[in-house]
Amino acid sequence: MSSPRLDLLIYAHDGRGLGHASRSIAVGMACRRLFKDLKVLFVSGTTMTAQLIGPAPLDWLKLPAYTSKVVQGKSIGDIGLSNFDDQDLGKLRTRALTQIIDLYRPRCVLVDHMPQGKHKELLPALTTTKKFKTKWVLGVRGIVGDVDGVWSDLARTTFVQNYHHLFWYGDSTILGSQTLKQLQNHFSITPIETGYVCRMAEFQYWRSEFDSSCDQLAGVISIPWIGEKTNIILPHLLDALMQLGDKYGLWQIFLPKKNAFSQNKVTKKLQALNYCQLNEPGQDYFDALLNCKVGVIYGGYNSLMDVLFSRTPSLVLLRAMQDLEQQNHVKALIESQTIHLILREETQVNTGKIAEDLKNLLVTSHHPLKTPNLSGAITAANDLYNLIKN
Image (cartoon, rainbow, N blue to C red; front, side, top):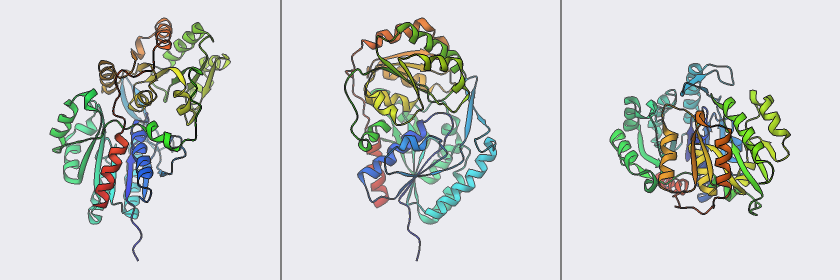
């Protein structure tokens, strides 16, 4: 007797931020919520997978994690947590993914961002699944950015020869149609516009009741990963919070504790302030963001979806990344007047600017100026279900 087949395998490569995993997990959550009998498995090396999934019934396999660092605005592969370098880890994950896919024989595979994988780790698996007639689907973020792994000839050839559908996780009423046209020209297929994929929009269905009494928290500050300039921005944040004092209420600061900054002088001073609370990024972030006056975030896709969902006026810090994805995305959101956002380049802020921005945002209405389409996970889940069953 042949072994049962997996319906949907979702793969997201990992590195610095949480965008790839967050989008993929949100789609997996929607599949498990809407189609309870669907066999779904999420595969990634993302170290925060458990926190992102929370109580949702989405199972997952953990691969050894890729690690990258930012050097002069460019992402560079680094030694991973398993102590393999980036290239060797790519080779090992190539073999692991091929074996996983050969074992589970998925009817459909959803891949985020790069059709070939970060280090071409999906190429052998694409060949393996031809005998299973597996259908492959690629999902890309609203603003792709100048990313070789998406716009290369290899990416195009890999997609055209192996993939069946292309999801665009964006909202054309906000972002326009330029990216849709670029994707169509590059991949020779009409993308399916799903709307934004927001993990928090799905996460809400698996949470118990949360305290939604207004204005309990002054604000939420989220620094999901440590970058080149974090050591510069943290002292300014500390001084700005000290200027504001405790009259606005409690500030919850979400900062990875398992890094060199856990014993940093600045973080120790933040902990000493009775109106500041340091937290590890995790499930508490959901309730905090829904129950605060203002947010301070970086401009990644995942963080922007969080504040769009919670309708939180926010100060958005931008890392000096060369692909310009975050810069272009935040500017489009500001121009379309979705919610109140203040944009600041990470390298150009100081204590005075941060304090002034926060004061202005603290008296800003949470009422959305324009409601974006955040139902991308539901749209993707429905399309995947139809693709699997038909």
